Length: 414
Image (cartoon, rainbow, N blue to C red):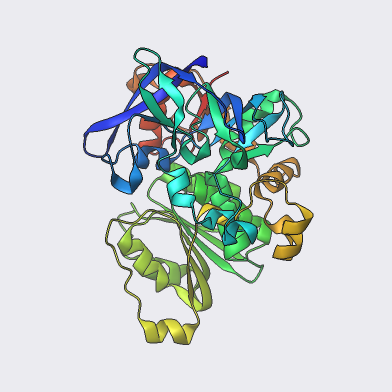
């Protein structure tokens, strides 16, 4: 067992408010197909907040647990059945998949039969509280990267020893494992965007920015970014949006009217990360024939999307549920390349790193180091979009992400 620090999530005492605290825990032992990772950095995603805000039992959630699913670190130990990962290897972490079901075997691990049961609650047995040996649910999304050390399931691991220049780059690429990957894959793998497309991207957080950058790479002739925060829209323009729609503007009334004023012929690719029913319903009305509508956000429980079936059929529209961008995070094997027809289209994390090297996926424009102060009223980084935060400052990271000042906070463990 290894003594380490972790942000432990306990059952919320107030509705929809995570109950987190930095504690000392013990991790281990390893399963046969597990690895021990010393975390260097971990991105914070809205999913961490959502699944740490639900009551016990919802979606199989149990407490106490450790969240975090955009980790980056170095391998410290490997299980007896792990062959292709060595101690000392730098790794990025993504989601868990079983590797055995039909979808995994068909190279669509994001739609794994065990995705919900294997990622949302995690497992029990590899982490305990230090004071009373209380079991802590870990391996959230197979990794629980809100811990300085964590026992990680092998299928989550992306070995980047050939992709990164030095260990310092782990913090740069940590957040590729979910948010940016989801946006990238939504555009490339599911919408299959081409230069003739007009892309409408709603919600300019990490997923939306990943989608925007990928739409630009695809050469989409128009990219419309939608958000309620002007600083995010300014950044979207800088990164390649041809038009922006500010839903907080007093002149704004309806999304479909605003889009038609820009593109009278309508949109062909819609990426929604907001899960706001009114926005999504209006976005569908912006579409032209044979459009693709990607739903990524988490909708209110019980919500049903009203769809005019006859109009939907006559327009040939596709509404697609998007999980992790239908990506294979790891380097694609020859078998995967053959089964998908174009393996390079789906090797998400190596592809994004290469795009960064080529200047096409400019994560460096989103990064800035800054000194965090305890008092938010004196915070001096209001215009910073992807800051690095020391792990003890996680509460500030959450606050800044919630109020829109930060797109993707990254906690530093090292």
